[in-house]
Length: 466
Ligand SMILES: *[C@@H]1O[C@H](CO)[C@@H](O)[C@H](O)[C@H]1NC(C)=O
Ligand SMILES: *[C@@H]1O[C@H](CO)[C@@H](O)[C@H](O)[C@H]1NC(C)=O
Ligand SMILES: *[C@@H]1O[C@H](CO)[C@@H](O)[C@H](O)[C@H]1NC(C)=O
Ligand SMILES: *[C@@H]1O[C@H](CO)[C@@H](O)[C@H](O)[C@H]1NC(C)=O
Ligand SMILES: *[C@@H]1O[C@H](CO)[C@@H](O)[C@H](O)[C@H]1NC(C)=O
Ligand SMILES: *[C@@H]1O[C@H](CO)[C@@H](O)[C@H](O)[C@H]1NC(C)=O
Ligand SMILES: *[C@@H]1O[C@H](CO)[C@@H](O)[C@H](O)[C@H]1NC(C)=O
Image (cartoon, rainbow, N blue to C red; front, side, top):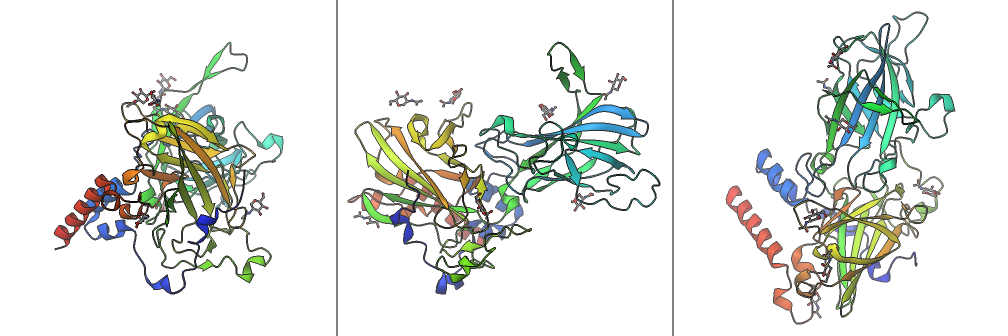
């Protein structure tokens, strides 16, 4: 398993130089001018899942469940469990940050397995001082390695939560909170409001808390069931459109039958207000250059696409009954290691993956629709860490597909993915007419459907703007 940059990828890492002034906006930007409804509609269709709905993961969400396990003289003790039900979107470093607004004058007496970032003004308390008196507490997970008596099950992972598809057991995070100056029965307790999932970054929207049937728990010997005194749920969904106006990754293509490399679109991830550093800069040898920033600001290697992540798909070999593609992910951020990265690819042949080298794979089965989407992720302790930009900042694999003889073709860009998602965000694709052509197929080499679609969208834009 080589861990080098394939040489055919190298030529696109040219610096931005004089291209800096040529800024091609993300197409959604254009649509914004057409009014909000229309832009949400069009961009949701073309580039992003519409708000809170991802067609490749229709039931994906993050649910917080509050189980009241005891009433206290002035409130209650609840265990809060976060379940990440998203198939391929995990919560990476620096972990989740949860906020809410108390309905009344509640305070947090204590927490186990998490803490609030600020205590707030507790000056009216004498003797016992609460853990937090803020009206809008902000809670973060504890780091691994806290003393045993400050832990509960599934806590203390630095807020890092796996995706459901990659590791269901790791997709849970919990903490316990003891609330005072609150209701002390299921009639008087007021549910917290305005839940916000501030970390891992923007993009999540949470619904209101809803009372649901009380959770039942099995005792460790499995012979007795106990029950929460009261349970409420909060559901948060992700929208890439809300997270950022630019995609966070881009896709490039190459093939064995054409020496042209189809690069990522220029400024695919936005060039405006972005600094970068050339890969041969002397600054890169300075101490601390790779240290992550508190605000997670990236330090990007200069490329013409200015994306922190590029996914490259190379059509490598064509056998009689099989064909083979190579997929490589390259990190261009000097300040970020991607832990537990995921890659989702949509391609009609993904229903027939025969063999995969050095990545794990899981088909994303959608009931009723075509099962043409799969999720790739790194093997634990081998390549599940995508290292910071530099010589080690890439992972790669090869996929062997069994041909369905009547659909397989090298023409019209068929062998290239339809959609690519990195860590749950859709990546910018090259324009359809730039895909590597088969020799002698000059005029039909564009995926016809895509071209027609692009044309009609253009027409629509012209009509509306006129
Ligand atoms: C509440 O959340 C739990 C998991 O946290 C989930 O299993 C359950 O289905 C949810 N209930 C409702 C009614 O949404
Ligand atoms: C509140 O508790 C009573 C019994 O103590 C129960 O009958 C009722 O269903 C509970 N209500 C809710 C919303 O859990
Ligand atoms: C909800 O919380 C967010 C973030 O803490 C805050 O900006 C916003 O003002 C709050 N909204 C309400 C209605 O409290
Ligand atoms: C990435 O991980 C490696 C090995 O664990 C570490 O040496 C390096 O400092 C990390 N880089 C960043 C940017 O966190
Ligand atoms: C996709 O897979 C699911 C589960 O195996 C199945 O129910 C569904 O019919 C499949 N869809 C197609 C179009 O094959
Ligand atoms: C894989 O391809 C073979 C040959 O065309 C076909 O018989 C089989 O049904 C395919 N498998 C799936 C899961 O589509
Ligand atoms: C290779 O693909 C490019 C881009 O689609 C195309 O312009 C070129 O003509 C193709 N080369 C050959 C030899 O067909």
